[in-house]
Image 1 (tube, rainbow, N blue to C red):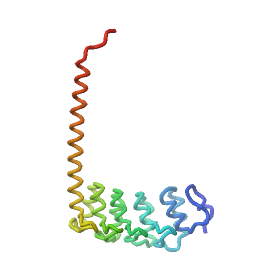
Image 2: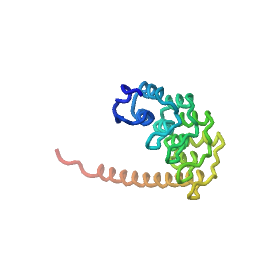
Image 3: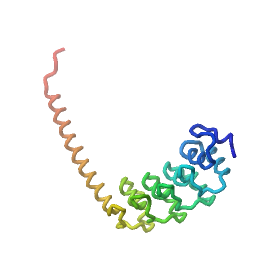
Length: 193
């Protein structure tokens, strides 16, 4: 459809336009992506590998392209074949501007995603993205909603806090060891010159 555009680095000849668009979202300049978007008839169609253009934008934080896709009619609840929504992927990746845009565009805040049936809040909590969690909660996300393993965002956040406390204690222990070694080295007599 647009052969001169589809020849950019990272794209393979003979693929459907949506495949080229998804690859471009991940690696190409905005002008190339916009040209490819113009060649796509339906922005909600998945690539031949089951990727959604909107989910690809959310994964890499391309707010500019995400905004244009939404304006072109992309569903804010778009999912890839993996079952991951754009909101869940943006939340997991910590891309706060994309999260805000998707929520403002009507994305379901507590949509269950993937085999784990995780919500965007669960994914953000697992990765420790506090700012994303706060925005999701402001938009009505349920912190007690459980995934397929019976864990909630609240549980993941508590586990992450406990892990952080343990890491801090381990860091402090190592800092004391290093400080003692430095003092021992300083106490050694200076070599003769």
